[in-house]
Length: 295
Length: 303
Image 1: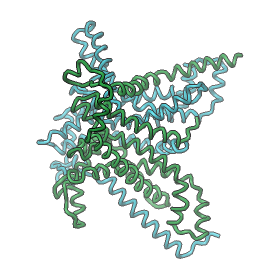
Image 2: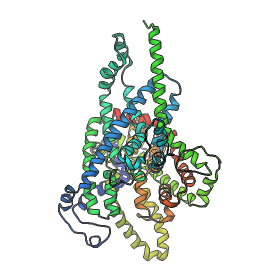
Image 3: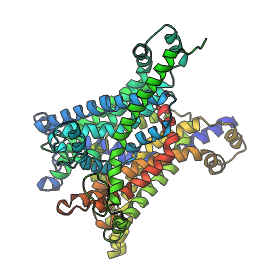
Image 4: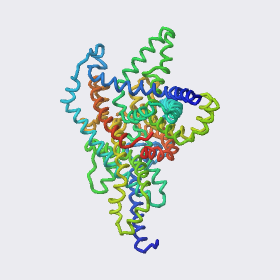
């Protein structure tokens, strides 16, 4: 009896000390998410007549969205951006780094520190660093490097904008991939490799038959985490190109920003935001299920 | 029998060489952009291009604080991000403790919810968030103005929700809360319960338990949660871009961004010095956070 009343009091207290976090999350995340669904059915705007008297417009924002070439372009750009930087670039370089750093070589700490460094750079700083690297003119760093290989220099961000933001985002995220994949690699027992070596397996056979299959759960989790966080990238691309030239790097987050705060069309921006929220949530639910949360 | 044959040592040497070569290439890729910021900030004749300075100088750093409002931006950033980090540490310490110990029905839904909240892109939330904060701000102004008259403006600079410290601090903190709560919950899961159950049986109040059990034991977890919150909030550009407008409240990312937009007269020495000042706390925090990185992510992997 005494224990029960103790426990009941304790349960009330747990809720009490969780309450401030709950209130903040409800007010500044859950409510805005729901509010954006409502906004997406109105013609809400920051300026003009609609700003004073917003009206309910039904599905008009969504039909407009469906016929908006710029919206489809931003979805496509986001897709290429996610595949190029998270699924291919960061994953490949992260995996290579993780495997190389497992060898008992010297300067391991130095190498891993340097690879972690880009992850620490604030978005705007990272953007400016790469504006310098990729600038036009023969003096820019990338141009000087490629011209030693006989390739003609270019104004990289103008000529290959999407490829370049993929390179920059890859640069920034190698560390995350490396850390996650290192953790995954360390769960594979060394005896399996020993046994395979005894049977005369080559390194590439071991990689394909042992490393990859056993790493699959980690790789899947990594793909979901990095896809979701790459969809959310804003500051880095904004500092580099602000979506240009001509929408070539206008990922969904930049498109939402431009619609809402440059064109001041909050209702339409909210409709785009709802699409982004749904895509992220679908990936997020897949992530939570794949993670098999045990609590 | 572990006999190393000559061919195997040759193989090992060759694979080590490949490892060195690939790691060096990746490291160069990762490090080169940083050289530009470091060298140009110490260069009397800084360019957009990476080159070795002919005249070394600290003048760029001095100018950040004398010619520009560098000191103000730095203070604003430190104040806003520091307050948000403290808030996150307090709230996630308490909340994580509750989430770890409770057996209530809401435990599982809440944990799923904070995982899902983490995947929502902030850009998709800022429009409704802006409208909501604007409403709060107007309501606050309507209350303060009759009471404080023209002082209300000064008060709103601190307590306003739009273009005020308070709003930005609260929103920045909220965005870091889910990860911090998760870190703290996992941390408390790893702490034995015997000690606090004894305290509970002795009739210790909640405050006593927090003071005697939670605070001393939770410090390593709080350090990790705080570092991650600091790094993420420090690097954030979107939220100050949208919620701040007056020059007195500018933070480092905004000052840096606006300095770069003065297309005709970009002062690269000044810009890179500013970037380096902005970069330094992030790199230091990252250095401290390093040992938590693996735990946090592998915690995610194991679930």
